[in-house]
Length: 369
Image (cartoon, rainbow, N blue to C red; front, top):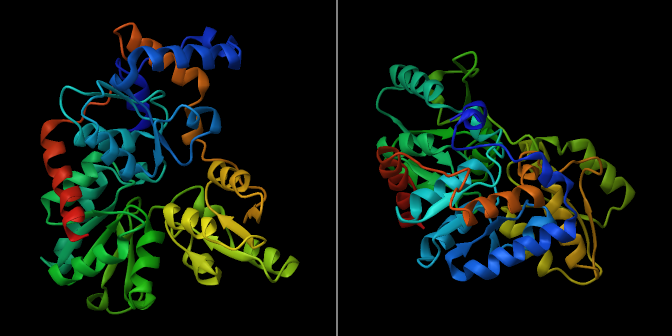
């Protein structure tokens, strides 16, 4: 579902303006009262990229799949206020029981990467790619994708992947079929395949706008078909950023997320998932120096948690993820007060047939390890 459709959805609603006029202290106290009132009946997961003003109320923090799995294990919560973006709340809704209500405090909190692959585009791509390559392709989708794309993957024998397990899932997929269609992030797909020894010369790009395969060479040499999508945050880290920090301080360690471009990952000292970035810096020696290529709210939190280390953003001009920042104190308070009124807004309901196939993709991933 597109962001425009979400905004127009009668279930989504819009926060009344008077919430913007409240003081931070008043909002904090009202949120705390609701949390105390509901106790274990209310669960608030907070993604790593959320603002500190929201994270302070999170009952669990983590990446998208981790939080959805924590929500799945929480059988006591009647309401789950997911502080993240839409595809994350979808996954939580699919993994929790029908009796549990998942809400997104601001339905405008989407993901530009997830929106780069919709079902119409994917169906057309699949028709054309199977015409070219026959029954030799297995689809994989990054968890940063819509429930519909996960369902498409599950129906066609594929699996979801995370940035932590992408290598294992890609390795498995190549035992199933000769080729992989990797949605929707070309950079994670390219970096993962390259790490596994697949040369760039065997990777093609599917352009969903032009509806064509971009590749120079013998088409039968294609091993990995990368969907032309990207993270608007991680793509802003550049080779120039790395050269600048290294020229200024040759001893600094550069660590980036694999959603960054291939050139940036190749020039970095380390790359890995959000969890790997956090763990690497947690385990680093006091006094060590780090330039971190990931979302700014998380980078600032890491800086605050490690005063014994020199940590900075790889791109000093980087802004936080705009869609993640949609959820703020006013929206969280409004969302919780709507729950308290018995009129929850921003309720996430994934259709049963989509849920069935999407969960197949997720479970297939988890069974692989």
